[in-house]
Image 1 (spheres, rainbow over the protein chains, first blue to last red):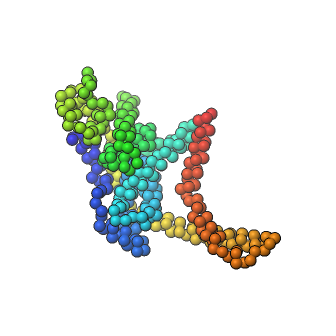
Image 2: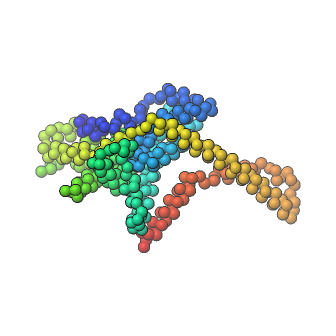
Length: 213
Length: 151
Ligand SMILES: [Zn+2]
């Protein structure tokens, strides 16, 4: 299936969590935490930080907020640790929690934006433009920054759910079935959201390209 | 011209992502149908233009995150102890004042029953945390928004 490979090859290996097997090392760390050794939790945080912030950043588009969401996910993990048993996977749990936190964040941002545009407070920075950053490398070329800004702006015009579903499928390489499980939706609903997201993004990006001509 | 065997727009998207069931039949159709091949090619072209979102994490990010999470956890722990003590003292003072002001003085034993302390604990557990306060903020914003939209 060449199309699938084309869509996911850039991001899939680096960003996805391993699934389907219980990590023995992780179980040992959990056992340490259960025995009152807090340094075990520190190890878990260090192990998962890059992946959790990366996911949050792809979902919300802003490094600072991505770090805040990651921190909240780890705090929730700490609260939930007593419930973790042999069959649970920390990575999957963090993935799901971060996704839900990102959806909440995106919804709040939408409300803020609506209020902002109603007030027409031109002196304050546009929250969308403000939320666009290029990631961690400051020497990125202008063109790629522009492409990123355009993508972020187009993504922000989708519904929170569509935005998250598109990002999880296109950039994280998650199967729609997995996304449906994460979000507690039917696969058919996820398919429809993905298609609407793709259609709208193509329209937005085509309009943007026309503006440039 | 698009025929009834042609892929719908949604099927095309799902085919692109390898998410279309019975994709063999669709692949057969694509092999024969120039229009669908062009539509798929246009979709592929548009999506290939999207920038990569590769996050570059620095080596110290994990250590920083572990430190900030640990600090937050300690802060929460520290905030709970004075709040718990204050609640216990408040309940104790309330019980004492009720017993003093009551026209029929109750025996002291009933004042020292474990129930009020338990109430104090459960009351404290129900204290709003930051998330709750944030939600409250959100509700205020929603209220403002509904007022705005109602204008
Ligand atoms: Zn066709």
